[in-house]
Image (cartoon, rainbow, N blue to C red; front, side, top):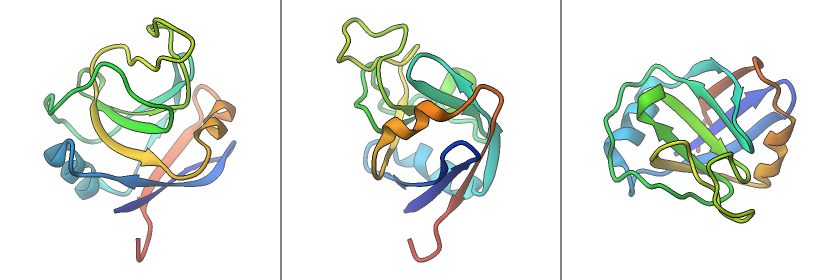
Length: 129
């Protein structure tokens, strides 16, 4: 399923919600759409609380640039565009704790570097996506 992530600083960025790695979590996110949250920054990660309460499901400790994860402890959607304070090397992208992999940014994820702390982020389904 295609989703759109909208924020004033980045405009509309399309992403894909992928169900093969964390199917229950991805389905819960899809069912909750549309929703919005308040952006937080942690290194080269933007995250925000969403109206989904999912348990750990095939959690991963390291992700790739452009991955989208669901962080169960914070009930948050996380967009990774580079290293975080937990990363052990400049090329590693490590969440604060394991995340359920649920999607991928389509296009250049580095655009999320422009997102400001406290900015509102809207996530919605892309029609015909």
